[in-house]
Image (tube, rainbow, N blue to C red):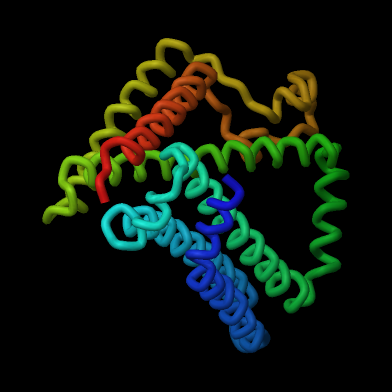
Amino acid sequence: MFKLIKYEIKTISKEFLIILGVIVLLNIALMTRIHVWSNDAIVGLSFLILFGASVAAFIYNIITFTRDLKQDTGYLIFSIPKSGYSILGAKLISSLIVMILVSIVGGIMMFLVGVVALGNFDAFLSAFTDLKNVTNLDIFKFSLVLIADAIIGILLYVQLLLFIYFAVSISRAIMNKRKFSGLVAFLIFIVTNLIVGKVYQLICEAFPKTINPYVTIYGDSYLNSTTASDPSILLMPVDIAGGIFYIIIMIGLFIGIGYILEKKIDL
């Protein structure tokens, strides 16, 4: 698996480095606009750079998967003695690594532009101090909430990739590089999401019990205090039954895609 991940990252390293380079260069260019443009405009543009780079990385992750199924680049990776599940796992992990690194680099550059370059470091530290004093916020517990938030975000991203990979794999298996295979994949993606989304909605209505990691970590008594901040701004509550349903769907998609890659696709 490690060798497959290494191969995947090596394959996309050139484009990946270009994305990171664009993030850095555009933010450096923004720093030259300090005292020329408004601070809000500079910070807003830095955020848009991060958002655009994340979208670019996401699209490129899809392109590389689709390319390996439809073009000659897939011969090497699909000819090695590895299961379809190992190949899919490597692609998912490498996609996550790319997205996480893009987010980290973009976040660092936003910090350098919005806090350091604009001279807001003291205000940044003061904001944290004021937040702790006003809400009696426990930094350790708050960090746990952010970790839970990050895990949910990663799961949502993997879920989206699995839906897309599933649609592309089914389209490749039934269309075999024929015309309009991309349109078929798009339709499969839409229909699959609509069906799964409707079932999820019905499950949530039937079993409306939710869990909020913020509540779990701080306890209901904290939320009832007069100084407690609104937990909804930190983490969206997750429906328990709906969450379990989506985890089962993700496992099913992973198994289905791995099977298609191994048994149903002839390059």
